[in-house]
Length: 439
Image (cartoon, rainbow, N blue to C red; front, side):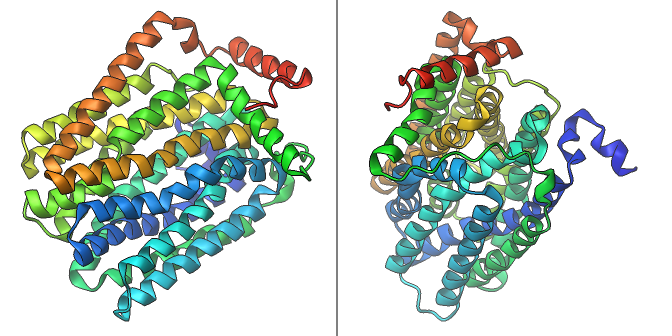
């Protein structure tokens, strides 16, 4: 099969663009390493403390900077060259992974060190995440950005299948620190891919004037927040995904103690349970890849499926039930999150893309500190099954309420080009009159 026939397919049309192929190839290697680190870090913390609440604290430490600084990361995405910003971010992430690997292999690692590195990781992610999200349209253009976002999601979740399984086997056969070193080395692939890109083929918008005072910074960030608030379909996507992610998407906190305490398993079992969520996520991403336009109906539907799957695991806490149920949970979670992402990408104007996407990533990723503490506290005070049950009931409620609201406001689900263009025009008019500069 030729490259032309592959890239001609609707499901992978973003591959027509050389820069995107380089980005995708580098991410394919790096994301496996990132998932290895995620699993290894959770297992290391549980081994050191044997307390699910500390897992929640570490997750909160890693994602609180995203919650506090994510909106300013969007401003950076709209003002600095995205490719070079990403190169700096990926290099820093590699260094942090290597430091944790060395500390673990030498036996020096302590929980406070993991917490410090987690905070630093979160600070970098607060910049890297909105920049990476906004960079997609520069690589492929508006006509292929929805497909690029879905392919990114498919890749992320394919790594979610491979990474945890490899991490579990690596930890069982060698040492947790080896997984961290592999992750650090894997960033080289994405850095090389970014360096090989051609600036002439990027569709970069005109550079935004950089704010020079605190007032200008706040006003600029406020434009993105105001656009979200004034555009119903974007606000709906952010709210539903944010609530469901906070309540139900806490796998890194609930699954390790579930595997160890409830099922009596080891790191390999934990890795395979996380792989099950990845299989469902990949299936959802591949299913979405062939769609030219996202359907906001899939956002609450995915939340409801995620919640129902978590309830099933809590009711029947056996590995034979948990594996397929986590596959369904992964399908629902990514069906919801990827659709929320592509819905926003379809509507947002280019000049606001970084700041609007930073609102989405701040709410989505920044929900982790709250959700992680919530899930970890329940698992510590009661047991992991109770934590899964609470998350499932809450997430199912969010999905059902979201479906009911969308049924009453069907115009929000209309993502025709006419509606998208009108949304962009309305936001531009608001900025011209000064109404969109206040948060």
